[in-house]
Each structure stands twice: as structure tokens, then as C-alpha cells.
Length: 44
Image 1 (cartoon, rainbow, N blue to C red):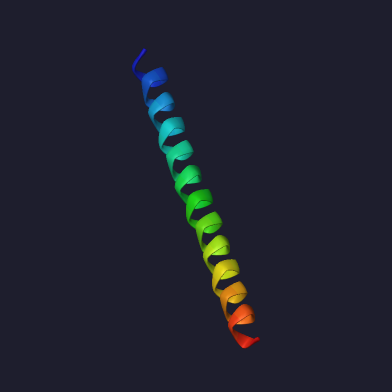
Image 2 (cartoon, rainbow, N blue to C red; image 1 turned 90 degrees about the horizontal axis):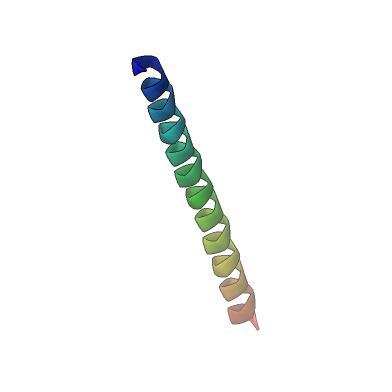
């Protein structure tokens, strides 16, 4: 029973890490897209 709980905790931790990584990467891409779009629009 102890081992199963440990595996579940590790899985939840892995999911949290994956989620935060996706959130960070997605946010960075959206931020850069916004910055580039703003610069492009300000150029004209």
C-alpha cells in the first residue's frame, strides 16, 4: 500500500511539472507573439 501511494505522488508531481512547463512555454510563445505583433504594427 505504501509503494502505491508513493508512485501516485510521483505521478502527480510529474503532472504538475509538465503542466507548469507547458504553461510557461505557452505563455512565453504568446508573449513573444504579442511583442512582435506590437512592433510590427508600430512600424507602420
